[in-house]
Image 1 (tube, one colour):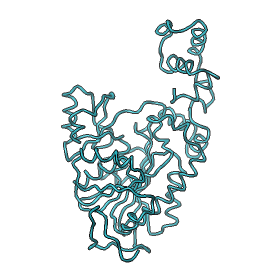
Image 2 (cartoon, rainbow, N blue to C red):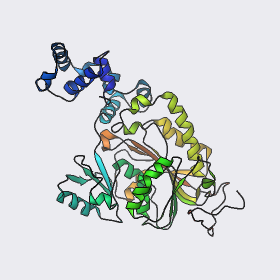
Image 3 (cartoon, rainbow, N blue to C red):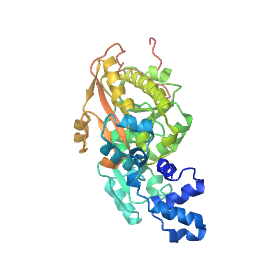
Image 4 (cartoon, helix red, strand yellow):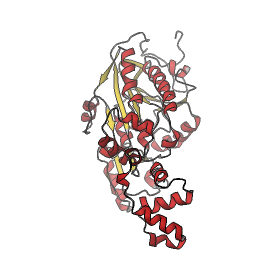
Length: 391
């Protein structure tokens, strides 16, 4: 009902919650009237029969797309109505359940073999070389492979975004907006549990959710750190010292509507303006951590240019010491070929069967005004560099 709320409110104006539920069952899920007639009164039977016969394709475009007007207005800036409607219908579908294989614990084929043994239907993900897609949605929280950290729940699109960082063994890496740590754990495994990987977030709750996942993963190179904001002292101490930084920026989350259809009602144009300010500030602060020759990956789970290309273009204009690195070459090195990939990563549910994601890869070409990394920097007990004598 939440996925098609705008449509339902249009065809059933002033409907009660019961009527909305009945309309969802009969019109959207294809339940026959004979299957539920024992709980219907005469008026409901007549109304539902009329609704079932109604042609939804004759409805206005905005109703069929079932997106807010402010979202449709912005998406129309970059695509025609046919493409927009295909995207909208992709967002109306239920998302699959994807797993990421922890290569430190098991190879992908071994995971697939175990799932087959347990009669859990699964197949390799279409693009990610470390992903597994389940055909249904069984409870996995007590499965031995989950408990051992051999697999983690992570959308295939999120896995691909994390691969753009390409962290190497022994490097210093920062996940600037780590959240519950899906990409943090992915990068830690790619580093073979070597080097140092800092997981920054402003939320104690999200970092607390990372703790059991980190324990299961077997990684020893991850250092979760709560920060007050993007200008926290823990961040400033790492300026100019980091090889690779991932910014999975806070955003409207419109690319995840398959999983979170309520976002259509909870986000609005005013919230977008506030998010844009945060995105600019976080990206600038994260860029200060990158040492010359280092990489900065900016990503969102949004579909809007205002949160994606516009933020990156503005950043590059203000930071001439950074250049854009086309993602197509990076993905090709990892055996991934995506339709539509060029300078940016753009993932869409109706094309790639993933959540909607955007990412840009940026490389620092010179030191600029930031302090160069001191190779002899000493680390304290928290895994952070000791306080510099000069900022």
